[in-house]
Image 1 (cartoon, rainbow, N blue to C red):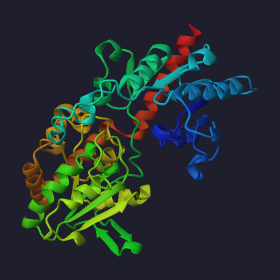
Image 2: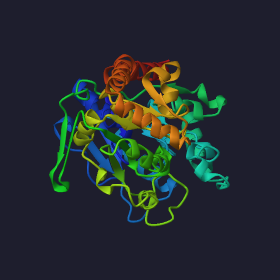
Image 3: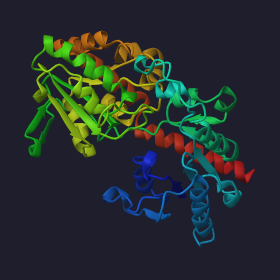
Image 4: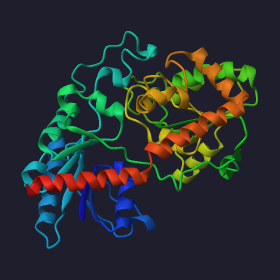
Length: 402
């Protein structure tokens, strides 16, 4: 089958799915706005098309540019059999017109609401009222895609439940899957970062935190606020932060140069800064090694999208601390209390106690991590995801035939 994948920041959600489809014999063409296609052995056979603009395009301009490329592809000798597109930046706005009877699967991802960005959820935002219109445009794009496409997919239960009930029935819950053959526990794991003079090993008192940007959405403030309490009991504990220093999804502007700088600046002077390691963005392979070394992975979150790194932490058998209403807790449902060490998002003292508990009780931490690995083997593997997508492909193509 010839699959056409559309994502402004390709590969995006297709990071693991697209290479697996290529390996299984599917022909894959991708459209995105990035100048360069992903490279490497796993991407051999990919055809990549870029839509270009000299300045930041509007949503309609993106939609028109993508539609033009799709029309060109559908008029070629070997046109796509099926289109899959993220709806978040306007790229899907004109697809219904140009796809015709061509099956189209949309990715609306999330229905935005104030709570998903921490309002009424994070005590640090108490008293701040968000702009009521901030979610209007992304939600409209999501609804248009839902109503026009052959099928719509979300990757997690929390994303599904974010949508109004009138739209939930149009959505298919289909996880993207984790490659469990490549991502797995390693009790001998070691990550060396020579340029920083650092080496991390499994068995150390390592507390890890991973986010695309080091910002409040994933509980950065609560983690940094609790750190003095942790080090008072466990002075040898190390905190390892992975992520860029951008604004991220937070609507609250930092007081200083950034959210991380704000959090670091509020630590007491007696805190050993040499035990706090800010690694920036890591290559994926290094990030996985770090998770294999982790004695405690802190994964608090607003009710937002489910982070890949949390699923990969489960696959690496890292013991995870999260809050009951986080995306991973919602995903695990009734099993969450047996797989996660739970703490309220705003409970700084409770978070410190949870971290100390896991670092002082490695057998308990091991059991939590092993339970998480068993869950993802049962429900979250890439192979299960690929089987689910094949069934969906067959279903939407049958709709066209009938």
